[in-house]
Length: 455
Image (cartoon, rainbow, N blue to C red; front, side, top):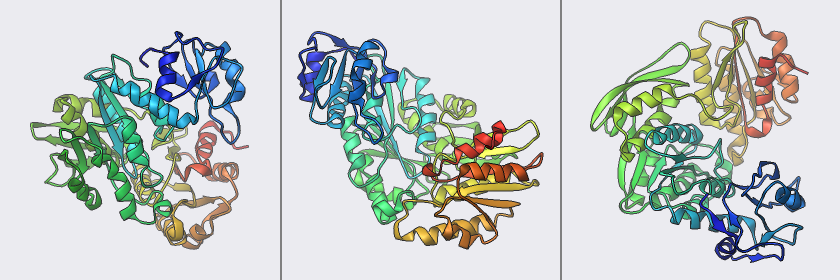
């Protein structure tokens, strides 16, 4: 973060300093919402959550080195008192990014693959200069400004992930840190029930390209018709990525190895280079192409792009993590989240990675699908039942539609029971897919199977 006196923080956030605060004291960052993350120079933002109220940790944060607390009520520590911490965070982040004229902001959105694409693009951008990007999926109204506030005078690239839970969310995030390059991956079925249809999802995702300036660039998926229509919603120049011949940045001669890792020729307007991904799953190609197209627009040569893509390892947890146990059991932990599209991709990867082996899947009913939830979850059951698996284990009390689609599946109440059921069935050399919505906590199944703890 760029250094800011408390008086300036109060001015930006329309806040008021309490009697303990020194207007000349300088916040040097980081800005944090967890008092355990405070270091000397921090600004601690007191958020009232469902389980804890950050205001209760104000003194602890100050004693740990926080210059002040951004609070909504009086606390026993130096503080800037504001009306709403989210609004204050947004204002502070916007003020900081406007003071960084040398930084290029790149936004990434889409129904699936945002985090992987953001991670790949952050690695590519870092080859050209200091880069700030969120860890994991820090992509909402709190995580987004916190990421922006990590930037300082030396930052050259801000690679940001923008999430939408409804119409207007991406537009709001884009106002905080106006992007010059916007990447839209796809329009799928994630949060279908919240939006009410794919057309509404497309409307929300397209808010990113609408936020671009006329001299900016929209990086769009040439293989997704709903993304393609976004070209008419922006004044920015459009560059296309994908597998189709019309894509400016595309994959040619694509192959998949026995571990589900793709190799292809990366074709750009200025040349081509071979790429051999270390990421698992054919869907990783789309993410790699999107990151490559954005990096190409930033000025990175195609050879450097291909080299970085070929060495990139997964950065964010529980997204196609493929691990082999000493006995040869392969565990595919893709448990961070799930929707109908990502489920199909994951089962495809299991088919490749587990070819010629006994295969298992641990899944849970998909959520946020609205009135389509029963039909889509029954389709998930049919997908699992038709995958030629040794057994399908379905977790959770809401599994009825999935079980109707897969009547031979094993139903268990929770992740711990799934781990026990699976451990009793596994033999050396088997392959296991673990995937479900975040709320199901299925990462615990993978961790138990890999660690041998199924209590």
